[in-house]
Image (cartoon, rainbow over all chains, first blue to last red; front, side, top):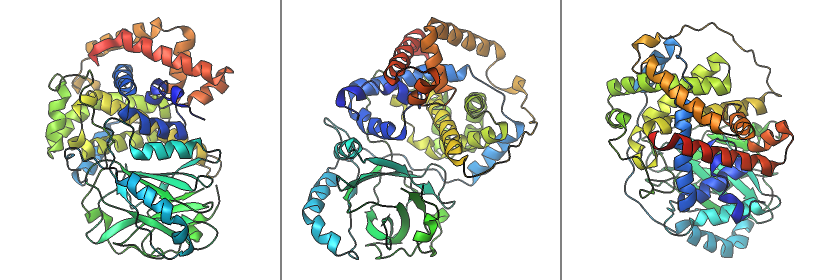
Length: 244
Length: 225
């Protein structure tokens, strides 16, 4: 679908929010590590900021009070810490591939999977390569899971997968931290009971990316909070859910 | 869209209260720093945002006054429905507040950041509306809204008129087909593929028009974002 040559031309459509979900994900995985595209995005956004600033409308009077009331009860996020570079996701992905068959047989075994911050320095981040592979597959699918009301605005979980490639890429953003001893767990829902797909481990900075092996076609994906180490079946409220 | 997926999961409860949790926001996977970016400090709103990032609500209220007409204007232009636009604009501001400490001046001005967020949220709203339309019959409220007095806000009408004139001139430099494609995408909230269907031209053609149009706009509007 999207060849490498094409992707460098998507910056304009990306800043206009005119890409479909697949292309948007692919471009977001690509551009931070591409000097040309990053400069494009920056410059196009600056131009659009001026277009936006010429598009003013007096807001409803009640809006400010509503915003300030919400602000007063909304916790702010801490600043980002300096770069943390890791190729954990890639290493774990390889390890999972070799033991994948064994694990698939033991359905109740909790697969603790690595979610690592992979910051583009030089080459593309490891998850971007996996994502491109998934999105290029004929059955590649992208799904934004629906957050439950318990999730604040800005929390998102997206899953891209291909049953043919036997691989899924999870991209989570803006998730509130879990209490000590708890972590987010991802569920693959096929024809039977939800299968644990692993924990989305806490990281201190960066989007959360995880690459994992899948076996079969999901009908849905879900996320709950579970005790560290995971549960064999969901015990917490469903925080994100998406039907394939 | 498989119906009733909720039943695929057991309805069990979570005994922790998410609202009491600390928060981790996982940022974008890069920090460029070496692009041609506006110098920090050159952005008059950077100072207000920095204070807001340390929890200063009064500074955030000032920031609101600067940004609200733009944020609401962009959202309204895309979403159209005033009461929905108000909801979306509120989400944008709460998000700006939450993320204030994460703002990275090397990635653009505060205004550009807010405009990006406002547009993205507006688009998310219209696209999810679009996909929900078949399932849910919504009632659209057409409430007559009470509007702020603009006289009290920070930017004067004169400044705004100048901004508008500059942008209008820049948009006038685009070829009619470029302008049409850019406006259908940005204000119409359509993907470039949808624009291609609307205009009955090839997707590649629309992509090119959008790209060329944005390059022209960038060159016309230059450094002053």
